[in-house]
Image (tube, rainbow, N blue to C red; front, side, top):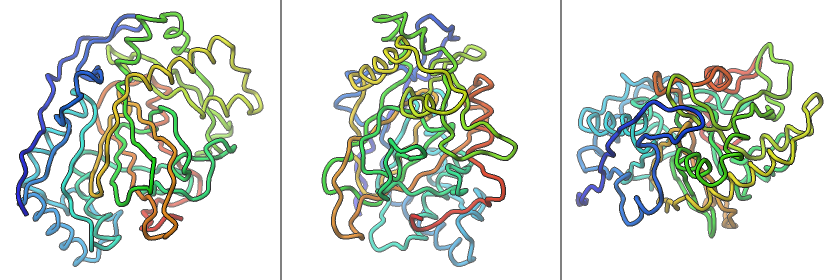
Length: 357
């Protein structure tokens, strides 16, 4: 194996206190022309870093540790530690996203690949449940679901997904296999999106500070009786900006009992948000073995529809983690409360399935 030049280049990591209704100045604001032609956000693993990851996997496997049992101290990565610290700083105070490339996955077992992904990620945050089944390790693959159905989840569908932010501090994806065609991963700075909306259509930017109703998709936490919760799309807390998605969770909530209908003005704002995000997005070309981390409060992601392979063992498959990261940024209570609880259902224990269920 040959070490390739590493394109990783941190951003300036600068920020001024944000104020709702005014342009936000922070390194999480980036535009396509500033990134086009560079891979500054990509960290390419070196031989010694790969070797210690594989050794750490061998150690936890030899000890018989389940995925949920692997803690940071069980997965020492001294050679990679400085890079992971830098990536963590970039997620928190920089562009808000980063990718690690070069981890070998061919010939590795499901457990070995999952343990590598989980173990590396313990150095950046703590995984928590991402669905009502208690999955801390998720599987992004087509399971015949439709995002348009009442309780549909996009990660179980082959359909295109609009720009959105996952319900966590940092969303992580580990690429196992790609689709036959389509499935293009796209990301956009929600800070840049907000600034552009303020410039072009300030009245629509203001409309998205409304606390929208969002469906829980039938996954109700303990002691929660309402099928919806409320959050603004754009918000500022203690001088820190944050954004949520303006997509199907809002549209589907409008059909729930007790939820007022969406006004035409707010629908227009949501449509403009999606169209502008598409304009400001970049395409990320995944390779098997890639691990992407994105801070959900400043980064949106989307996916084009895809056509999959006929053979089950070739079908598109990504692993996913939703992670909490202490101190990543202050959030308005409505967002902080949801992220602190994750998606939990009474009586359901956390699990990390190695296969899609």
